[in-house]
Length: 119
Figure 1 (tube, rainbow, N blue to C red):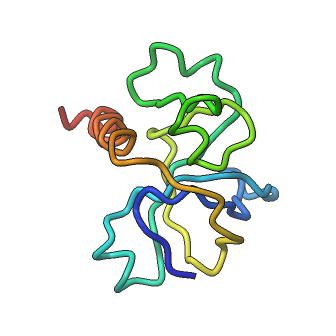
Figure 2 (cartoon, one colour):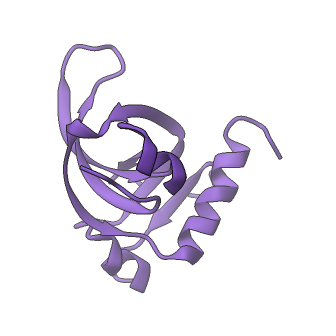
């Protein structure tokens, strides 16, 4: 499945300790040029645990009642964890559930710069 930057997708997400996996939402953060030419994409984990995201500069909270939240397709208020990135083969994408608007993706870009200390 071809994806675009800003797509909110469901992925069979492998646990970091490789003991199993779980279907969960993720955000495509890779640029669209690479999304078109490669079979892999870079994604950020999305978690419904927003408690640790408040005030964390590497995470963006998406509230489902807000316009961006409604567009995302998420069922619960969630946090995009820009410090938790992984490259996956697009064959592990189950389906697209929504997308984030440009304004939210601009904020994601800021979070992505902070995570590795680029800013």
